[in-house]
Length: 309
Ligand code: PPS
Image (cartoon, rainbow, N blue to C red):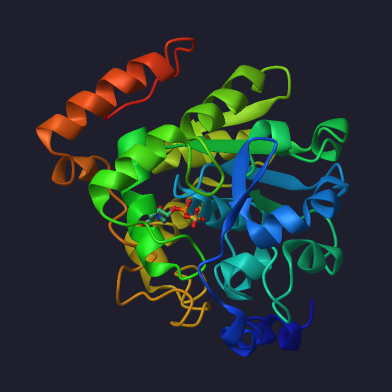
């Protein structure tokens, strides 16, 4: 992709301004997706990756951008300048995203790139194009504890003018529990990849682990990708992917999206980056109700989530 094409990404969003709206959700095989995604679902399903492509799958707001930055730096041997060649969604396209023209879809961006590409998705396991598994693409799944994930999504839905209105927090908790947000149920999402992780050789990571010991988790990703980087390079990647540095980096902080689409004055994309912020949001009643429901929805699996109490 030429520099000009990369620069034109923000401009294309600006040009589409008049058609940007809080898009309605349309269910695809039981999963509510933004209408532009749902209307193009067949072409998304038909996408065939290269076996060398690296796939990063998450429920929205679980640490996608962080992982995209880590992987881009790993595959480029920690070259900070090279990893500032373009904003995150251009360097690492969002597989299923479709927006009003002239904004390029994820598929359009991908066809202009040579493999190995770093591909982002929020699709639940059962909606992933089968080509990813047929071609045995390396897949990194990042899960974040439900409560922090929901808080982060709530603020994102306030500032992202393409997502449905979140409404008040109390109602949002119910929508999350019922799987009514874009990309559907958090519970089904984390479980779907969890049960397939061994069969599909998925590296299943947790936001809380990366936060606790970024070096350890970055090294896990490095080994999974069959890379071998020096200690010094790993240290640099730890530093470059700190919350503070990513928040200040215009190529990772989503300031590439014009403010009429991502209104970062409402809530910054790099908001807090913490574990346990949910404690500032739930009332005791909401917590009781959420925890009881969580028990039921998660009773069939034993995924080692942390920071839920
Ligand atoms: S998206 O829109 O789904 O791609 O969002 P995603 O990148 O998955 O999630 C955004 C949240 O991840 C936090 N984040 C980080 N936390 C710690 N360290 C680093 N480096 C980092 N990068 C992103 C970001 O702040 C969002 O979480 P909240 O809790 O809202 O701050």
